[in-house]
Amino acid sequence: MRSPLPAFQAFAHDARARSADSGDLDERLSAFLAVTKAAERLSTIMRDQQASYVAGLGADVLPPSNARPSLTHDVQRAPVDALACLAERLRVEAEQMERSGCFEMAYATMSAVCQLAARSDLTTRTLATVHLGRVARQLGDLETAVDCYQTAADESLRERDGPLAARAFVGLGNLAYMRGNRPAERSMFERALSLAHPGGAAEAAASQGLMLSALAERRLIDALLHGWRAFDLTAPESEERVMIVGNLATASLHGDFAAAALRGFLHVLTLTNTARIRLPTIGGAIRAAARLREDGRVRSLNHDGDIEAERARMPFETARFLLYAGEAWATIGDSDFARRRFQDAIAIATQYDYFELRLRGEDALEALERNQLVKPTVNRTAAQMHEYSDEHEVVRAGIGRLEALSV
Image (tube, rainbow, N blue to C red; front, side):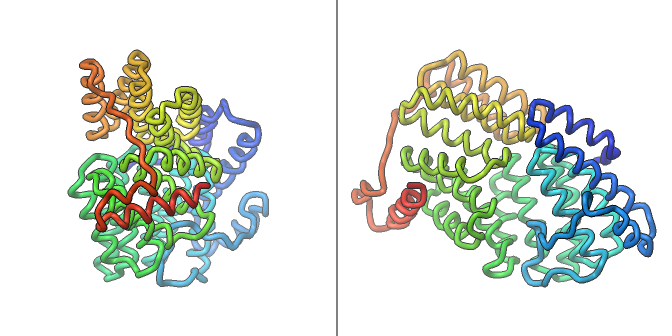
C-alpha cells in the first residue's frame, strides 16, 4: 500500500507540478494544504477531541457546506453521525483537489480520512477506501488501487451490502480497462450492475463502464444502449454526464460518424474546465478532426492536449492522448510527428504497465513504418442510416440524439 506524503511534501509536489498555472490555483493550493494538514491532525487525535478541533479550524479551512462527495450509498440517506459527516466533508475537499490535479494532497487527505473512518460505520469506511483507490488509480499506482477496491468489495459482500459492493466493482472494472484486460473489465462491470440499486449512481457508473467495454470490442449498438442509459441516470450538468457525452461521441467516432463525433467532443469542451475530462475529450476530437481532414484543427487540438496533459498529470490519459494524437498526425500525413507521439505514448505505457496501450502504440508505430496506418476516411450521418437493416435502429436513434444534443 502506497504511503502518503506528509502534508507539506504533498503540497510542494503538487505546487511544482502546477507552477505553470494561474495565481487563482495558487490560492487554492494554500487552501488545499490547510485541509490536508487538518485531516492529518484529525486522524491522530481521539474522537472526543475532534469536534473541538474542527470548531477551532475556522470557516476559511472547512466552511459549512451541504455538499456531498460523488461516491455515496445509493440506498442510505446522508449521514448524521458526526464522524461520518466529517469524513464526507473532507472527501468533498479531496475531490476539489482531484479536479485541480493536486493528487498528492488528495491522496494524503484520503489516507487520513481512511484512518478516521476505521472507527466509523461500514458505509463510511468502505466509501473512503474506494475513494482512496480512485485517487491512487489517477496517480498511476494501480497496485494500491487494487488493494483498496478489493478490500472494499470483500467487506461489502461479507456484510451483504450489494449497492456498496457495486462501487468497488466499478473501480476494479476501471483498473481492468486501464490494463486492457477485456474479460476482467466486462466481468467487473457486469458484477457491479447486478449488485447496484436500480436507477442509482452505481448503476450509471456500471453502465458507463459497460459502454467502454463495448467500444473496445467494437460493439456499437451495445455501447450506445449502455451509454444512453448512463446518460439518463446522471444529473444534468454533472461531471458524470459530461464524461458520458464524451463517451457517446467516441461511440460515434467508432461508427464512422466523424462529424457527429467532433460536434459532441467540442460540445463537451464547452461544458467543463476539468483537465481529467478535457484531455480524453481532446484525444477523441483530434482523431475526428483528422478523419474530416481539418488539418488546422488537428494542430490546435494537439497544442491544447499538451497543455491539458500538463494540468491533468494523469499518466493513463496522457498516454492515450499521445496515441490518439499520433493517429491523427499520421492521418493528415505528418509521419515524423506521428512517430514522436507514438514513441512518447509507448514510453509512458511501459513505465506504468498499461499493457494494451503499449501494444497499441507499438502496433501503430510498426504500421506507420510500413505506411499502412492511414485508413480511408468515412463519415456518415444519422440520416444516412436508412441503408442499414432495422436492427440498426438503435444506431440511428443514438447518433441522432447526440447530433441534436450538440447543436
